[in-house]
Amino acid sequence: MPTSTRDRIIEASAALFMQRGLAGSGLKQIAAESEATIGSLYHWFPDGKDELAAETLRASGAAYQALVVAVLDAAPDIVAAVADCFAGAAEALRAGGFADACPVATVALEVASSDERLRLVTAEVFESWLQAGTERFEGGGIEPGRARELATLLVAALEGGFLLSRAAKDTAPMEAIGRVMTDMVRAEVGARA
Amino acid sequence: MPTSTRDRIIEASAALFMQRGLAGSGLKQIAAESEATIGSLYHWFPDGKDELAAETLRASGAAYQALVVAVLDAAPDIVAAVADCFAGAAEALRAGGFADACPVATVALEVASSDERLRLVTAEVFESWLQAGTERFEGGGIEPGRARELATLLVAALEGGFLLSRAAKDTAPMEAIGRVMTDMVRAEVGARA
DNA sequence: GTCTATAGCTTGATAGAC
DNA sequence: GTCTATCAAGCTATAGAC
Image 1 (cartoon, rainbow over the protein chains, first blue to last red):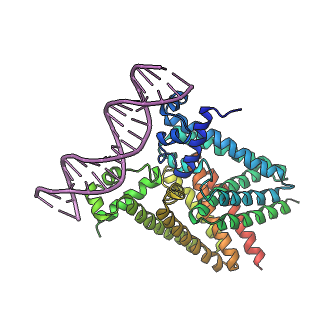
Image 2 (image 1 turned 45 degrees about the vertical axis):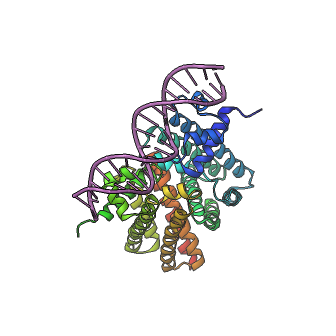
Image 3 (image 1 turned 90 degrees about the horizontal axis):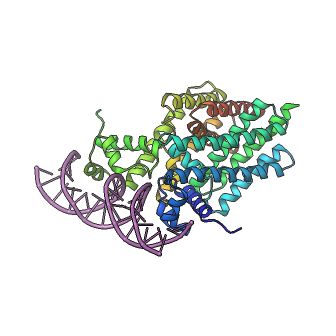
């Protein structure tokens, strides 16, 4: 299955959004990195940058969710799952030279107060993550309302960890957050009995 | 003490960075909103956008730290302090129409992999926040190493909460995170004995 | 210190050949 | 579907009058 032009454009767009944000990524640059031309880009995304950004957020949001869910579901229990989650995030940061992190956060902050259409897309992506996380905590024996709260903190802590670790170019913040979060979930599961 | 031109420029710059990020904020727009001219802007910041951005990050980072520290220190104990922190953040989001949040996070994500000079400035700001938070947890009777871990999660959870709440235009995520964080710190303080 | 004017470049977007 | 050429508007930055 060879990569389609459209897929290559979305892929390059996601990579640039991670590293430079939406306003900092030019369409010409996206076209160049995806080995397409501006004409091709507008053929696949007639509404231009807005449409490309929306599709990129949806696609990479779903991919990122699949990745995290795979890590969570591979663990023997919810406590190990949370620990693996932060360990994986720290490893991803190190492996990518602290460049490749969340494909959505940077753009979400940029558009939250200035582009209602894209803001709604980021809201949908985060909501999907929260639901997936909530299900896993429920599967770990946590009461539904509390599961949603824990999932919210999990996503926030991961995003905050990416922020602090990228700024510091050091996995220490992400690892520290992972330790506290793991301890907390362990206590939460223990308290359930 | 009338506001100086320089201060007005930094203020307008901070407001625009919060809402549109670094790449999305033009110098002409910053000059217009601060009721200055481009010439004045370059008089006060000869190195242009980079210098203005660095000064803005430092100034608003310090102001934001003072705000949080004031909330933390006004509370009777560390558990109430953490609760007040998230309640205050939620209230600030609501009052500002979900536009005014963290003055540093958006820019930090934008420059982390593309502008080493500004990345270092954001790292310094976050490190200062972490130290201030660590001191408060130590004052609450927590062992130094653990205090640093808790402070890291506190900052990450606040930033993650801003992200999720701004995207959703809803204080629910910030409030949920505040509940879990407060419970966690309460357990942590209890476990100290 | 403040202002206007402008240079030089890049941006998002369009038109039309192939 | 892919390409090049081009437009108008925006950007950062500079020069020089006042």
